Image (tube, rainbow, N blue to C red; front, side, top):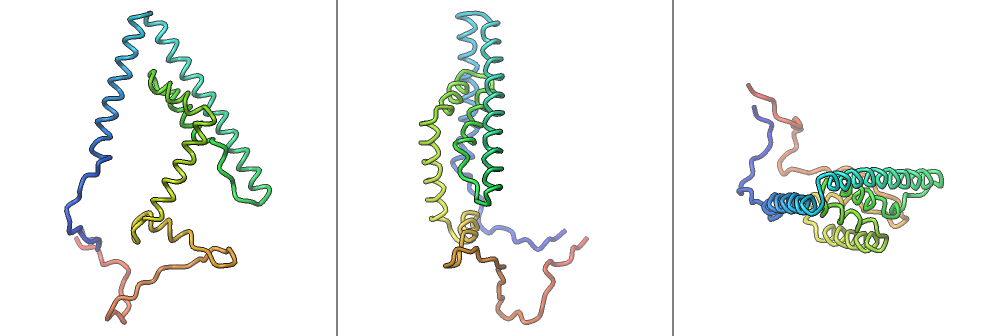
Length: 183
């Protein structure tokens, strides 16, 4: 079957993230298991079970609370007719709750760290600056370029709606949008 999609002319390169992420996850899992074995050796297996159960319950409670807060903020913003604000760290609270729910001591420590408001503010500012910097440096035609194009406004503050139309040279005759499928 042909779909009309062009095949890439350059070989795909593996990014550093795709190379090191599986190694990092494997190292993290080994560390979590090793720490749980250490705690079980120092106390007993029942204490480890209680620690893991407490993390699960606390994480679920944090996610529930953060979800309610985010939903309440969204409803208030919609009732006022304004755009929703940054949720007050609800996303980072949910991430902290999720890390608490994942079995392990390192993930519990990271989850508890994300529940501290100054850490949430610092990470929120860092993430915002990083996203803005990446969007400014985005190459036209990339995913970042699409986000950058979607933020174009008129001088009066209204969003300009439109559609991209490409003019192909020598293409006065209309063509089908897709070539026919062959068997």
